[in-house]
Length: 315
Image (cartoon, rainbow, N blue to C red; front, side):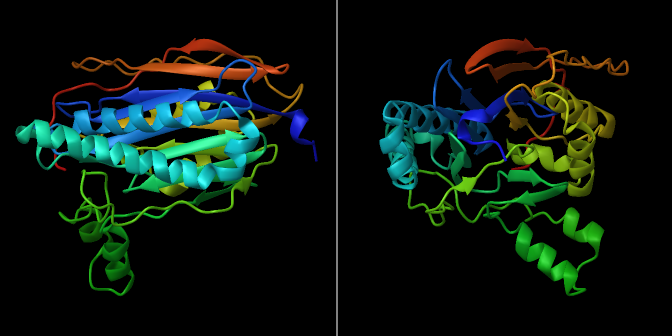
């Protein structure tokens, strides 16, 4: 197995509005040239006109800024990473509380949060809410964080035969969160004290729950199919799959795809740009690819397409 110095990261980040009226997802990813620590932070806002977009931007900006500041000393960051992640989250929650106190119209806003730091060959992470964090390894897809919503309980009722699969999937309370950053007490924070050791071939996908339109087995199959391709091509494949599904209630979606590759094993960057079928609505999205190769990161644009139409926010 390659040692730490032989590992390289290939990272792509994408965001799309789906069929919602407002973009309430926010994401920041940074894998800087020569850096030892890469960061990705995302949030899925809730509250609609009560400023879910503001909540997600506050949380993502505050957490990212704190992690970036604290990562200037990699050895210290690695030693105290779980505590740093928790402190950054509590600080962001305090900023949301301050905003709500100053802007009464935003009472009720909140956001999920996934924050991760890839430090050398280790993955540190924290999550609040129902935004999934996946690890694809050896052909298997694992959600490594908990789902802080009523979905697990509803799925349990389905397994007991109390609900049909369709009733469980369409249950009106499925997306009700049991924990979120709202400025009040955070009921659940998922943040392990020990990091996950990374190896060549691993793929990390951090996403908002808009990616859940793709069934887990299909997501696994896509990662199997594209596991030896660039993260940019994986990102394009995910956007294409969402377009193909054409969910009329498609939620906002954002994600980061992080591939762990060996030195000299990175394929040439030649992302496939999908040619979606003609539709009467607009498609647009922005994404950024950060590719670490030969000991340094270099940034390249990724043209990713996604549906952007008006829709009704259900959360």
